[in-house]
Structure formats: structure tokens, C-alpha cells
Amino acid sequence: MQTLNINLPEGLKISEKDVLTAVATRLYDTGKVTIEQAASMAGYNLSAFIEELMAQSLQEKATTVYHY
Image (tube, rainbow, N blue to C red; front, top):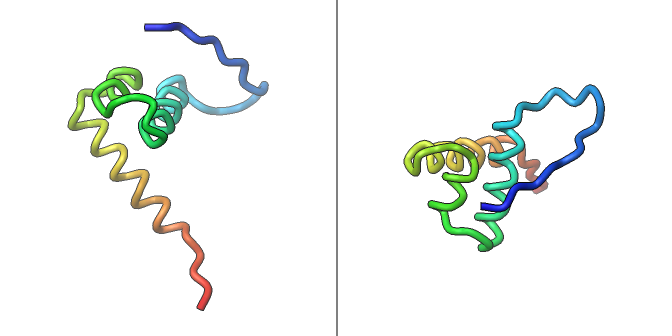
């Protein structure tokens, strides 16, 4: 697996796990990696990664603004 260094802004309060999860999720969403690869990248087993994806999906739906 390739290693990548990321420079984050000073004072940003985010864990390495959250960054890895965000990157893995985006790569999976765009079809660059399989769900199994994304789970491995983020340090999850497959079922836990699927649960994380579902939780993120629910959060996105909860923050969607609807205009009628």
C-alpha cells in the first residue's frame, strides 16, 4: 500500500482515524477502490465500515435543507 503524508492546518482537531475514514469513503464513493479496500485503508473490518457509511449517510440526510 502507498503511504501519503498530509499537512493539516494548525489547531485542526481531527483524528487520524477520521482523516483516513474520510479519504477511504471518498475513494470508495468515486469508484477508485472497492469497499473492502476502503475498509482496510480506514482500519475497519468490512461490517464496521459499512456501518460507518450508513451513519454518514444518515447524517447527510439529516442536514439536507429542503425547499418547497
